[in-house]
Image 1 (cartoon, rainbow, N blue to C red):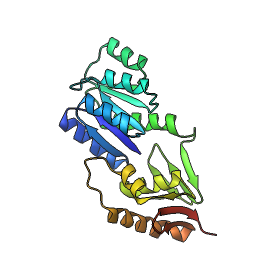
Image 2: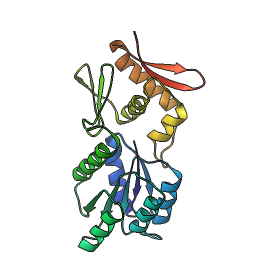
Image 3: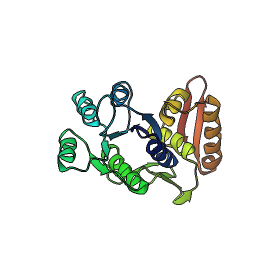
Length: 222
């Protein structure tokens, strides 16, 4: 899942980005409202975290412009402003949640999971395919009801494949959805993650087939 983080405090931005990346999210970081506005117009995100006090264009204006273009992604407002008027303005413009600085990262992670759970998936918040059960909010996987230890990037690949079972997902799609703009991307890394996933799941009848020249396809072996 891909998240846009618009925060001009570099230390805070790095802390949030690392925490959410460890949960298996791909994070795109921007430092100004203008950059956030352009990113939301050009790219599809699963969630946006907007600081209100952004330079060039504040977070409320970014939110207003995104909603006017019909963008329905969940938006979490992140700000040092704790006045009632700012909170009400953000919610009236279409924000889905609001958290005031300073805050604890586990609380932010929980709010992100809750927003994604409400917006993108069914009430039980799970994707099931064959012997696999993936909890979207908790970022956890079970195989035949047993928990599976899996790295964040392997989890990101698996999640994308689970969203399109029986359909080919290209390497480029995996790279785009897994990584933020400031990460170096290697096609060879995708092959490594696919290889690791195959080793974990193929003995249980779940296969990842390579479709030459096109990408990868998640399927259940008969």
